Length: 224
Image (cartoon, rainbow, N blue to C red; front, side, top):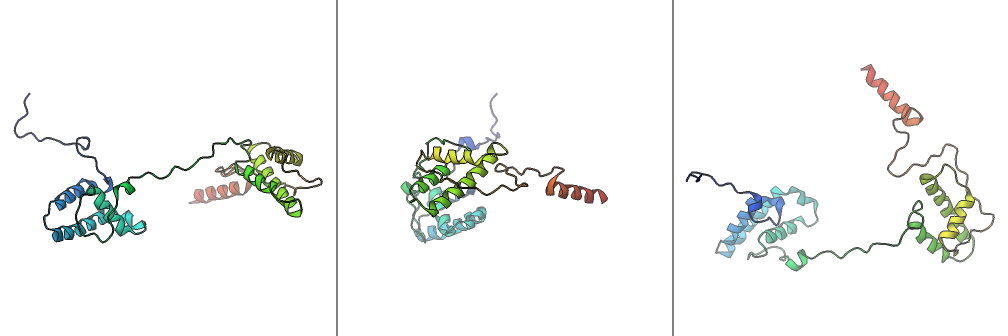
């Protein structure tokens, strides 16, 4: 069936040129294309200021960025595919710089020998191993042992012997850190509780302070 002369052809975004800055929309792209067609540079520059004002109103989030005015002019040149001859108040962006990828962040691929303690424990052990023998080093070992015991209780059992923590310190340090004889850790309070990161244990349950709060809150709602 042949289409009539009055048939309206629909254009989809998949059929047109991809937008360099989608947050400004295709109408701004058309404005920039018309801007490039103005023969007089002075008038072209005046219209460029007007287009930047439109861009600012369409993308108010840009105000949250530092030097947002320069960002807007940079975006104008990007939309124009860097082919725009106007007197910009800021240096024109360079495509090689704008399109360059950031340097990759090196990742530590070394496996963690004890995941429940975390990777930083090994760095701390390296620091302690470099310390000379004395009261300072003993205090550092004691503080580390207390922290490791807390991490152990978060991810493993309800109780752990101090000797187990001391053995882990010597094992993870490769024997470079020796726990002094007679060192003692502070006692764990009877009401102490250790929860995994992101978990608020006891919230919404019928016991503890949170449970009491929830019961009172539900009671107040029921009286309304």
